[in-house]
Image (cartoon, rainbow, N blue to C red):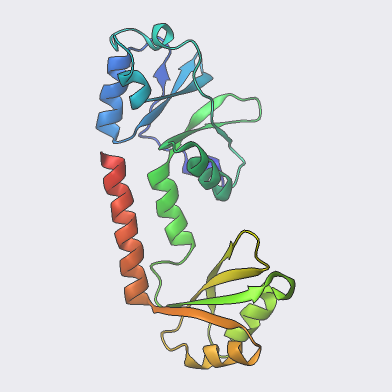
Length: 220
């Protein structure tokens, strides 16, 4: 999934001559906290509701209110993971998408990116979650997948979490089976450490709760 695939039709750019009041009104209607600003289809920067509210007179144009705006963006060919990293780093709710010539193509929202990411990760699919630990030196996704597949199961997704100053990594596996007993035995036979297991219902409910909390935060 590339950034260009996540460009949203419902997020319009602001013009540099638009007022701060108009920007705030659009953000409120769209339920976002940021919007891109363009000048003759050239990306100027991104403005936030808090930046505008800090100004004494939001009825002025964006040109008058801001000398310089921050310019976070992704290229149209960037992967979804690159977008999520930038969303996390900038705390933006919207990211502009530019082509290689840095011409503005549109914007992608954090909400749409997270919705697609949850689908891609198989979060809502039937199955269970198994969390294991393994040393970085011994880590092999091919071997982990083999441990799952030799028990007539399928690995839907895998996420790696590393810890600072540790040679051990945590691997979270989504597997398309509810009964993980034989799979756990296989991992234990190869001396993997089992951290925890989660059935689909409890895991999905937790992820849904976290997602709902994020959506509620974005609505504020």
